[in-house]
Image 1 (cartoon, one colour):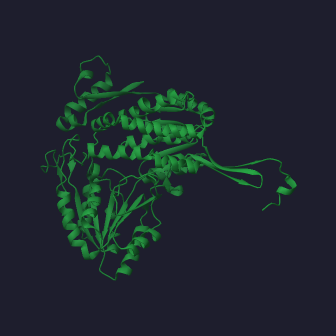
Image 2 (cartoon, rainbow, N blue to C red):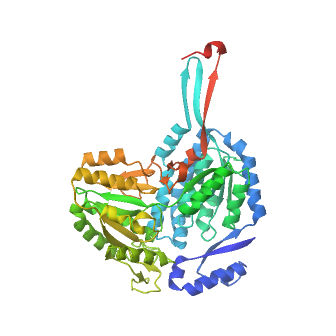
Image 3 (cartoon, one colour):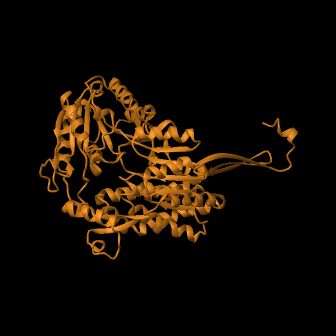
Length: 514
């Protein structure tokens, strides 16, 4: 048993040495009465548990499944609606904690909006339709329903714990018992939305003890336990693609369902008739959180006839994005601690013929270029030729930096160009989101009809914005693994079961009914 402390992100920008030293000192001597614990930099602390408690959480979840899954679906759906209301009621506190954990407030608002949308009235109604359907057939009541998988373990990522740990209520609504591992270095927001908001709702519903469990401990040991313990049925894993695909194989080998949320390398296409101003706004979503978010645009493909105009406007917009404190509503950038790969990717692109449009340097809080700066400038690189772009790692791979290649295809007939662009998008090894900006109904129809890649397509809309009913997460290829698709956690953590309820049926006759 121990403690991890959270110190404010603003203090880390103002006085990193004092903040880090304070955090380390508190974790070595975590007396809450000490002067250090009362320091203004301290936001809160979270208990770290040992493996006996991790095992106990699994035992409690397994013991709760039968009773909880028997709770009527209508009651479980009301849990989602009430959780949404709690998120809205406590919005300011949640945002305050997220900002303290280094999320720029604009980014934090977007993340919380994502989570609230997952529990919107429209989404809940759609989940209900998918979970249970009935019809009559020759004296029988036929039911197609989804049944809970059992115990679901969730390992949310450090870069976005709120919108991902907050998904835990969806598997609960499916009838599962859930275990969530709060990220050790950024645990407060996860604990707040689950322990302070979700747990009281379950208690009011008289859910059995162990229906929802939140643990904070050594990540690898906890994940290894989930893999080893036969009582864990599903594991929702967030992380890099290479490690995630190995994890998928391990899950399957042990008879568990892997639910993967891995890297993204999203494409955003801008056709020649697009609303360029709106498209540039969507493209600049690439710089939210300094690009350290899987679902931001990672590569732009622009029609050659408007390439110069779009890139010129994008340059102006990107240069206007500057660092600042996370509580400033105009700030989008987050600190980037390790940037070796950023500069390696940029050097490779420039060596292979890419042209630097803007950015490319580390900067201080006030925007001054500095090799020791905690931020990276929003960086745009022009790459001429779609075939040639295959040689650029920043085009082929997720970068997780504020580093955006703009690919300009060679001029050719529009019909040929559109097919080439669609093939390029479908050829992406990843498949989280793809989006298009165009006015032509024929171009839009062709894009929507032919693009098979990704769990979500957006047309003339925010690339990262969330909507009811359509999936918020999930994708194909390196994003979702062999079982990748749009991810509705309520459906992903349940399985289809057919039921026939007959009365007065003759089995001999029933064999040949049609």
